[in-house]
Length: 273
Ligand SMILES: Nc1ncnc2c1ncn2[C@@H]1O[C@H](COP(=O)(O)OP(=O)(O)OP(=O)(O)O)[C@@H](O)[C@H]1O
Ligand SMILES: Cc1ncc(CO)c(N)n1
Image (cartoon, rainbow, N blue to C red; front, side):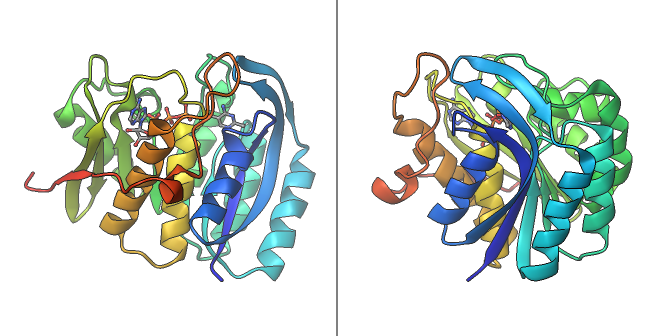
């Protein structure tokens, strides 16, 4: 059994955060473990409260999991504070575990999930340990100081992230204004490629970023090569958005079971860049 780990915040609404990660890990045939960094009181309408877990409790959860489980890949989501980032980075540095960093900053409704002063710690302590980083466009802009408007600027931002020490940058295009496609660009030192699916107009997109990065983590844990792992993660999130559950009155969760319950999604790959 391949073991995965998520270090993230709890979403009481079940569509994002730890809950999305564990459901996705399970769907893709891995055994999910978790370290909770914060408890959010959240539903489809928004984030109503955030309670950060004391840093010593984050540390003891992470030690407990790392000491006893053969973790094959880990991901981070909501980390909230510089102190939590410093602790997670220190402990992960001592282990050679493939790490997917989803640099969660702001929830879809606008609530802050990462304190402003934590961005430096993320850049200097966590990103050098990242195998893969999965920023959306606003997050990539904050981390690089660049303005992203098209493929060329997405690639340039990805390359800027590589200089921080990240091995692979996946810049997610879901937020690009006026886009009819959900186009993500993958930049590594030896390869640049694009995965693309049709953009789906829906309000049920709560937790898309968490779900995508968790699917990628599960595939990396199984030893799937990068291109194939990204393609499966893209199929997983596209299916989850395409077959909504219509839960709640706001931004509903995606359907984490859709990848197995519906027909396979077509992903277009461009690699002649
Ligand atoms: N409406 C959509 N239709 C199809 N694919 C989408 C849509 N929205 C996002 N995606 C895809 O979902 C994945 C997650 O990207 P997204 O940009 O939504 O992450 P995010 O903004 O980090 O999410 P979150 O709000 O959960 O933090 C990417 O592959 C993106 O292209
Ligand atoms: C706990 C948590 N993590 C991440 C996100 C981003 O979708 C969210 N809304 N809530």
